[in-house]
Image 1 (spheres, rainbow, N blue to C red):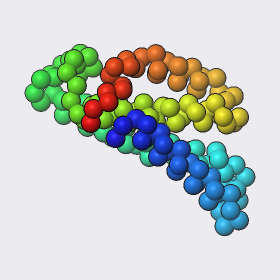
Image 2 (cartoon, one colour; image 1 turned 120 degrees about the vertical axis):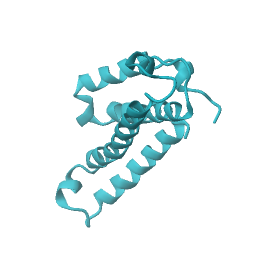
Image 3 (tube, one colour; image 1 turned 180 degrees about the horizontal axis):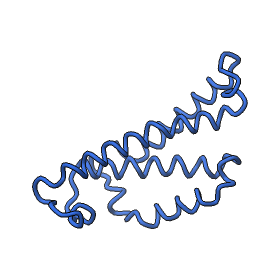
Length: 133
């Protein structure tokens, strides 16, 4: 999945959840701040996916070419699974940054914006945006 598909999917999911949580059928805590509730729910699945997949890759990469932690962190050759995770993370970060900028409850946490700036500064463009699939 290319990064922009991840961003588009998360934005669409956010819009749908916000609409659902705005209805009278939703529980009262969700109706009070439907967009913030949708954001929180939308964050759980991507973080769980990235954490579990990244941990599995880290633990099984000792077989084969990458036997030391340094080789696992700074591997020059990039396989499809790690490239997929990197693209997914880029799409997730773009979604999170867009919502941080437009949602006042998230904007007040300046550390959140600093975090996004640091992520984009550390992500080499040529590594995150491979266009071939």
